[in-house]
Amino acid sequence: MPLLNIILFALLACLGSAIEAEPLRIVSEPWAPYIYEEDGEIRGLDYEASSIVLKRLGIEVQWSLMPWKRCLMELGSGQADAVLDIFHNQEREARMAFPSEPLSEVEFTLFYARQRPYPFQRLADLQGLKVGVSPGYWYADQAFRTSPLFIREPAPTHEANLGKLVRDRVDLVVNDRRAGLFLIHQMGLGDEVGQHERAVSRDRLYLAFRREAHLENLAGRFGEALRRFKREPAYAKLVDRYREPGAGNLR
Image (tube, rainbow, N blue to C red; front, top):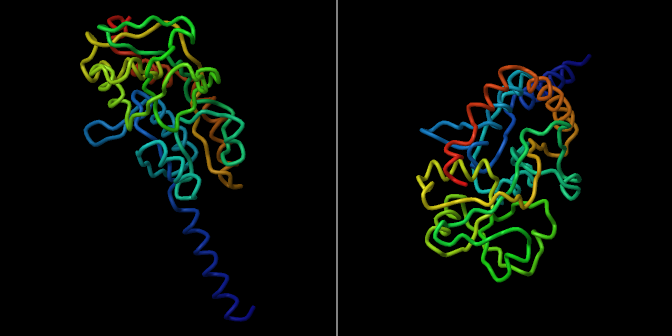
């Protein structure tokens, strides 16, 4: 083999190894207790479960927390390889590869200020109200997602949504039950905010990968490894650590 070909082959091999050695870049929006930052460290149920599974697969990861809309933009532009805690729907199938196993199941409910406990049993009860939502979030119940009966008002963060609720700038706030209870406990709002028992919608959270051959393969491996991990006592301990704090005081 000519010397030039040998050199080119060696350079290509080195380049390929360098690309493979690059850490997987995963983005997500802080959403306690699934993923959040505390004392400069990322924590959370789905973050820790994903980290454990990816480590077992031999995958090095670089994590970045940012607003949800930016997460989706970076995944779409190729700046990110995967996004943590996203809902699976048909529209996203073309751009994202979803593992066969979800990370968590969520239940969206409505939170209210105790001084203004608007009743909620059906969609018509929201007539004329202003409901705080998260921009870019997918709410599985189509009627709730598209209803003209009430106004959906986005806020930049989940904390901002609850702040608007207690200051009477929105009438209700929609959030996952476990996430809402966790955040209310963190913000010390247990005496000011309650939640309705009736769920608006239910869904599952996934670690979704960008649609590229090697990432689709990783999505398959991740789903299988996650399913195995969920059968271990270590996973049960992890779930127990992030159970709803102070839930009994928020009914």
